[in-house]
Image (cartoon, rainbow over the protein chains, first blue to last red):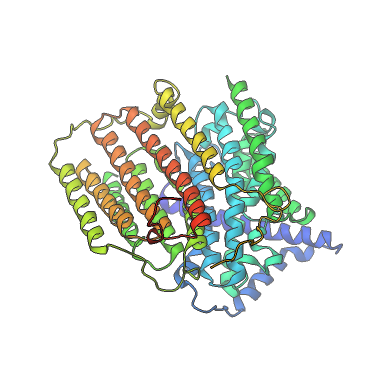
Length: 305
Length: 183
Length: 101
């Protein structure tokens, strides 16, 4: 794929999926509050975005202005880079990287840097607390995350995402590695700091890293955060649910159905599961998810042999 | 194609050196840590242009966490916790500058003057596969030793720093009561 | 892109690392200097692997070993910094004139 097409394709895909994530978020939000009639759900995200665009930007005392401006752009860019590693249909690969799954992992781990900078640069109390939370959260979920992602490469005997998908022709990885997908989704929520693991931007910190951000900057930050969630869901569909493989329907449609199915689960859990305390989240990562991820690696390795 | 790769190589090379230099020229602790990360990312990108795709990407993957930890440690332990204020914390500046320049000149001369064999990697092989086979085949011992060393280090580091909280686990009242008079 | 150019870039990174490790007062900044030197080492090792060994996989293996060294250096370094801070309340090298406990 030529670079110009790749940039255009990834950009359009991200825009559309982020909008759909916002719609889902609204629908689930209306559901939990018992409001009937979801007709407004399609327009509400747009009017919220318009409101943010018309707001004034707040400024803090002596922020690290360059880093503050860089952070949302970096976050969105990382979402786009992570998405390039994933084949969208048979033969439609934005970037055909041999070690695609490592590229995806590298992009996601850098999310921690973007969020840390975002919180730090505001030069204000709550954002910097949010930044420290992100470091603790991301470090405790990153190892189980990497382990379950790399385990999907075992049956394929390759780090290329395309080969990982085609290795699931007979059996999806979600069946072959039953521990993989749940751990992947929980840790993926942590990386995209999405509810219920929205600890770095949580309400108990008045918005955490984005406490001092308003207006267009806040809109960009939210869009970038959703783009990470989209990339996580797309990779979940590719690595565990067989990506574009499926009968009757064309490949890209299968990929879209699986991705948005996972996105629906992720967004739904944000409205149904309470946000844990920081200590609980860190403990969950190190003492529950990490051992389970190791079991996943060993069992899958033994089965592959 | 190779023109683009050459151009990218020079971009990343200049970026790696400049950001590596900025690590010690900035006043902000977090900036210092992330300039260093930028230097690592640039070197990772150079490795990718050299066909060592796996090594380059894994370097980038490793560094995000490590540099964030560095930033936090600096904030934790430095005397200027605000971190955005101007500061210079250097000693023996001239000696260090001379030593740095000397190391650069000496190593660059070795690199330029020594006669290294010119045997470029053959194209058409997959270096990632080669590396995997080597790691878990011929050089299993090296891999295992690295693993055991890392395990020993993990245990040692935990032994050095771990402490229990007031009520049991570290997260239960980890703030220890001040029993001694602080200076 | 040639082996010479790669080695000069690695030498520049190493020089910056030496300067940093010698000139900085803060322990963590010194560690950054060390890391920069290891960064240069990785670049040089992979450069040799690429240009001078005919794609011998052991060259890449050496880079992995250097990365392991980097992780070990960071883990032990941070543990020591933490311990020194707890025991001596020291955060810069000047406060550690005596090595005796």
